[in-house]
Length: 306
Image (cartoon, rainbow, N blue to C red; front, top):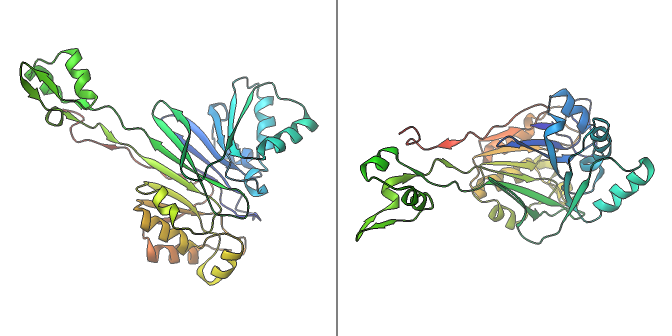
């Protein structure tokens, strides 16, 4: 869900950068601009389910909301640890704030992100999260969320037909053939993948660079900043930002299925121009608007009910 779609200067209808992501019931917050907790309350994003926050960089429009959110979580009686991922310097920022307002009652676990290529930084039962460097005026990182490859499912009719043992079923689920009395039961004939893993890439403030499309190749849903329209390309290069056309080119080159544009300059009262320019290159482009949800449906096998 988009909680904030503005760039450095918010407007009356656009809050600074903040986005929530739900994967398998687990809630993640990506960037935490000013007013983030107000937007979470407004759009009923449950505070109690938030355990992991990912900060792209330390410009204020991506981090100023973090301090109020940390305080509110403390006042709600939170006791479970809060994991925060972000670039070097975030620890000093948090320590400075806590020095003024005191320590919270729960543990804040800070994970410093530092990489020159996609690097695994967090792993859960069904999910891997990678960071990768972006090209901005200060140290900035994007984040790639990838569901893990599921174990294969054995076709139900094959279990009775071949009288498969539990050990043989486990072997097939791992993707291995079963050897029985000199006869090979081939995994590819007896199993199917229950679903195709989904992926989401968050590409915050960045100038275009060729490696990005390679690093997020095949991603289902991409969020990419689109601060300016094409007539301000020169300004975008000076400020290390992207135009909506730049974002569309990344989505096209990476083979993405859907692109969400965000981080809009306050100079735009309406965003039609940004969307139109992106769709000329990548038709499946959409605007990030506060409260909007972009879903990546589960891609299940037609054999699932067999």
